[in-house]
Length: 83
Image (cartoon, rainbow, N blue to C red; front, side, top):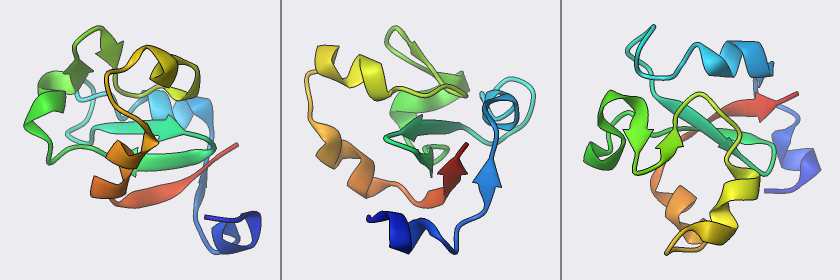
C-alpha cells in the first residue's frame, strides 16, 4: 500500500494502538510498516499474545526474528495508519 492509498485510512496514535492489546478491549491490533492490522480473528493472537510478541504494538522491528515474512499481514484487515 502506497502513501497515497493510506490517505483515506483513519489515523491512530501509539497510545490508541496500545489499548487494542486483547486485554483492555476485545480488539487485538498490531502495526507493521505504518499500518494497523486487526488480528482479532487469529487463534494465534488469542489473548493478545503471539509467542513472545504482544498486541497493541508496532511489530515492524520484530519481523526479522519471525519464521515468516511480511506476507502474513495480507491475511488481516487494515484498520488504519499509525502516527
